[in-house]
Image (cartoon, rainbow, N blue to C red):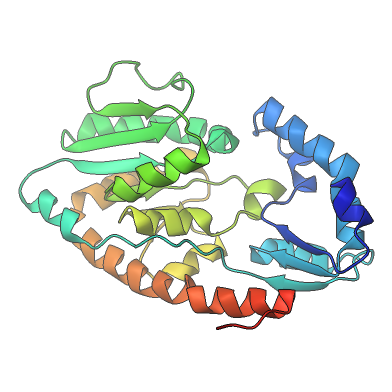
Length: 276
């Protein structure tokens, strides 16, 4: 970071989170919040004021930095690009043969607060529907989850390369993405939406998260408070035959946004390169 700040040429700063907002987000794990607070105090503000170009991944960050008088950089929103194929909808045929409807929460430790709030709703759906299987990432199970339930699987966190390999091999039907109303979660990027397309899952997102519009209607809107998600999750499970159409719609819409050519043009312009 010191080398970046001392760089005499143009500085391009790509930002995927509201770093300063982490200091106000009590639901973040303490060690994670502490690392972001340290980065914010040592480097983040200096980089914002030093940068010639700011690339941000969410509308919230665009508004946040656009209203900051101390920032003189040009601000541009950039869609995260994933060089991975999106799943087709073939795995939804399993539901017609009575196989398990697979739900997943792909959030990391930074989503621990909302996931804990969501856990009772998940248990409600698991208890009511014997055809539902749930997977999630975590170092330990939330108190609401039994440690040995046959239809609940806890996956140990992975390093990034292993996670990408794992993700490409998975197929799920529903993906849960609860968010709180604090600054940090409000600025979340569309990355998880793309991940859900890779695994072929229909996303359940808070109804006020505008980024979900990238699915073109191929997702399900849930109440803002994840504690109130049981009803919408039950309806999604009971209307499983409609999920395949939602997944296809999301895949079509997100394929337009996850555009390799647009990324190449953007970075060629920023770095002064020719696009072959």
